[in-house]
Amino acid sequence: DTGVSQDPRHKITKRGQNVTFRCDPISEHNRLYWYRQTLGQGPEFLTYFQNEAQLEKSRLLSDRFSAERPKGSFSTLEIQRTEQGDSAMYLCASSLAASGSSKNIQYFGAGTRLSVL
Amino acid sequence: AQSVAQPEDQVNVAEGNPLTVKCTYSVSGNPYLFWYVQYPNRGLQFLLKYITGDNLVKGSYGFEAEFNKSQTSFHLKKPSALVSDSALYFCAVRDVGSSNTGKLIFGQGTTLQVKP
Image (cartoon, rainbow over all chains, first blue to last red; front, side):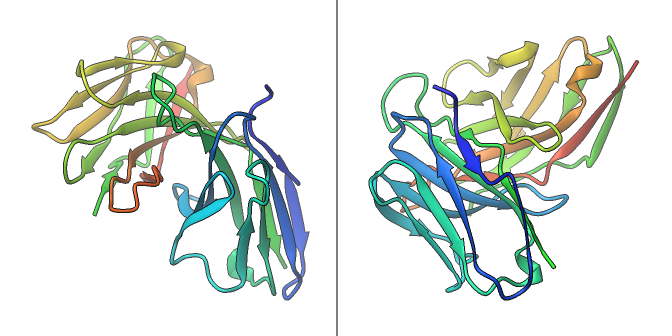
């Protein structure tokens, strides 16, 4: 178990291009979250999956954003027609919906830093 | 709506001295509170959580936090700071709204600077 993995670590793109990020959660974790963090701010919730079902999306997630978790394992976050305001760190976290001391703890990946030129 | 506030952008402390990083919260009902630490170009690392029980919670790397219901605070503490503790610290509260997704609401973060 190597923790939550995110790929790529850095992405530089031109405005208007599409980008896709991948998140591999901890293997037995059924809950997966995406957050966005801008400089000097705390992470802000974007979307949540329980297994393969996307159960909540933030109002921050415009129509240009889409996320999937097709088999309840890895997840992808796609941004279409990127804008300079999309530049941020995109963080993925996973947790286990179960009883015990591990419940409610979200474990984060290292993030993907997006720069839109 | 749930929220947390970290009133200090930066805390400076000398190595070996005790440190406190402040957090206050606003929730309806019982709070689920967390502290995370972020090192440069790294993700957030879990330090500790308060769900219920003892008001003093012990966590990783010698950190602890004190839950104070009357003051709606959850301050992070360490008896003796290390230079390696220098990082960005986030307080968070679990959203317990109708969706019950467990999403976290974070404060804006406090930079801890420990000087030798």
